[in-house]
Image (tube, rainbow, N blue to C red; front, side, top):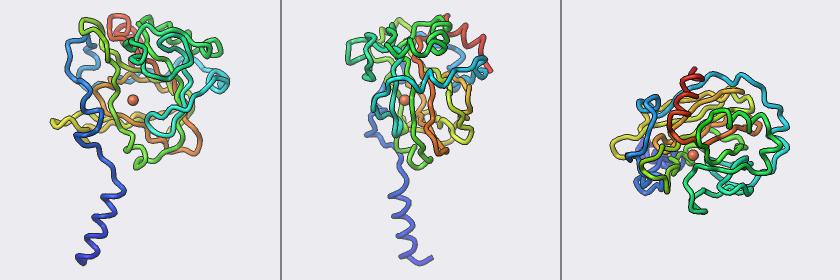
Length: 244
Ligand SMILES: [Fe+2]
């Protein structure tokens, strides 16, 4: 290879591959705190659950009110529960709350199966939202890889907030990309996990710990239910019941 060719290849790589650096906002989000945590998440920050044992009628996500809110790609969100019951996608911290003790929004009345499912877990929940994600390949998705700020304002003697997913559309060629932290606090590629996003797939992720983003390799929007739950005995029992 000529020197010219080598330089051109290097330049192409540098302009097409994104990777977070120490300046990424996620690096400043706390990892190690005294909050109550679940043993089942301690090793990898991830637990797969059995596929949902119920069907969700499509109108429960198609008839809701969505908002233009960008998180993890080209996304829109429909809030089912928010800090004060308003149709609002902002973080609970904007209203002085941690991501718990949520109130149902007007969307929830249109999605009784989803509302009952979240209630049936029995744990304190925060934001409950449906995400609508437009297609994005891996190169595009990596630009949005991040960790969540789930525990801002969360008293340190209470439970660590984690998130659960329920896939509403069938996207078997898509996956949630998860990576744990390397010693430098950046995503460690040797810890990569790919969670398939088939219809009914369910899983729990410590998204404040794991870097995450969805690679959506289909030509239609992907919809999923995302719920914040407080770690504690109720969530632990739910996971023990529903563990894959
Ligand atoms: Fe996130």
